Length: 116
Image (tube, rainbow, N blue to C red; front, side, top):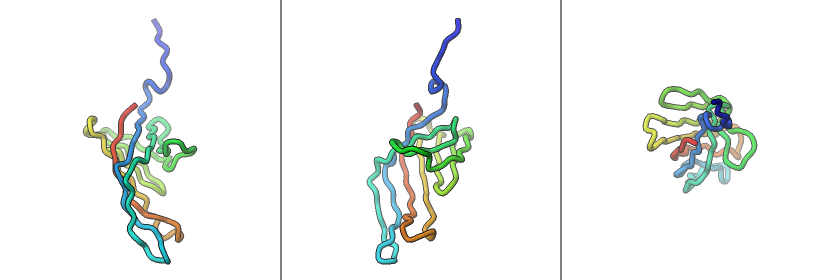
């Protein structure tokens, strides 16, 4: 007997939802602290090696490496999923290009991921 299953049934994908972020914004040519209460959603596709914000086209990171207990993605943004505890999979992401131009907002964001 042959079972036909859609590709998402075996693909390793994660929905990651942020708990919050802290960073800096430029105001009057000075950096001022900024805080986000979270709720941002990201789709991590191990198969495609990408991280895409939910509801947006195109990934923010497209160089993900899957290791035994972590997914590590690098680019302008760094995205790291800690898979060592499957019940509480945590992630953190950073954007550190503070000096590229005046509208950059370097930040660190944390949250939780769920495999789907």
